Image 1 (cartoon, rainbow, N blue to C red):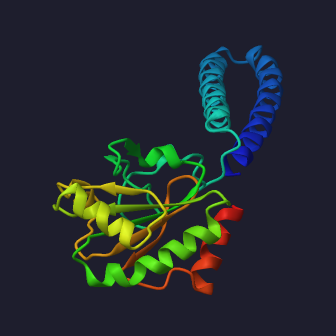
Image 2: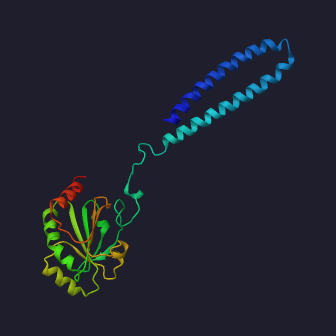
Image 3: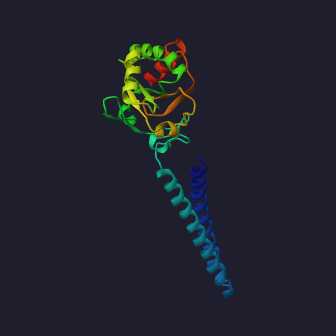
Length: 230
């Protein structure tokens, strides 16, 4: 807005200056017939006029450059998720990773873009994890047909058979991945187990949940439904 007003005022100033110049030049022409020493005045006047014109042109060019820069983008608006950095914090892109499932197939978090994802870090030795698993599975059954996914990342260093046995006993119907070295858990600062992250369809962390909770209550369902509608 400031740049636009400056350009308009500069145009008016330049036209007025040109008008004054023509009037002054006519007056100088009359006086020049009487006094020859007025000749230097004309030279300095046209130099000032030239400098003023250059200033106006520079201002116009600068205004046009600002207009063309990022057309259509509002101040403070994020145009794409590419401008967001990866960090295990709310409002940031969830760090991407690739881990094997219980069958050995590599699964990447980025494969689930376009879905709301609940990322849950857990372990077989974790008592609170065992408490929340049933509600996780109920949540999965309620929303799995609506672009919703649960990724349960086991940070166990135990054998595959032990993890598979736990999954079978607790009837975990959602995908389970193995982070046997704990590298992904460290990237997500998952020092306490369980720790969960709710991601929107663009992969942005919208809710971080440390500790266990009831995952099929009304509050959780409303938060998930809100993200599903976006």
